[in-house]
Image 1: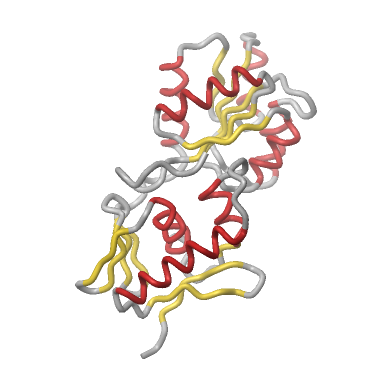
Image 2: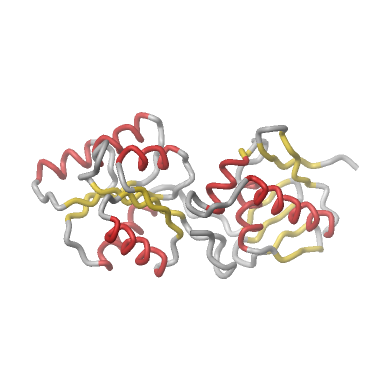
Length: 237
């Protein structure tokens, strides 16, 4: 899934669903999509861990009983790698010992199947709120401002409207001042694993943004780090 249309506050949160029952995984994906989330699917523990380690997800909905690594092992590996991504465990095992093991492994919440869809969404919202303080409405860099709710990019008195993907690419760059954002990170975070998008998609949208920066007379520019990615810098007059 790609980002939603540019309405509301920036791009939707992206959730990884790791569930080996494909019909249930797709049902969960539809539920999250209707609630305004973007999502990707993984069907076993090894694939789920690889995806979660990418760092592009705002949260993970993780089944316990999986082929390959089980859910407990996935969470433990994720935490050992230093990833603090919120994890909501799903399981049919309701024993207290299993719940304790899940929470001790590093999960943020443990939800027993069967569950009501409203309960799942409420639990997901709760664990996502613990992740970090509320994101600011406006990001700034060297005089350049990005208004997430209005989808606009401004320099002084001039501003320009951005598409949803332009907004998300610029948000990632402005949220990492002084750091190179790898092209792969932009590709996965903005388009997702299953989109079929390639490197040239990132290059095209960076080109769009550069033209818009020029249009508003911005001295802040998107620069390339050869074979690595992109970063923002303020050019001298």
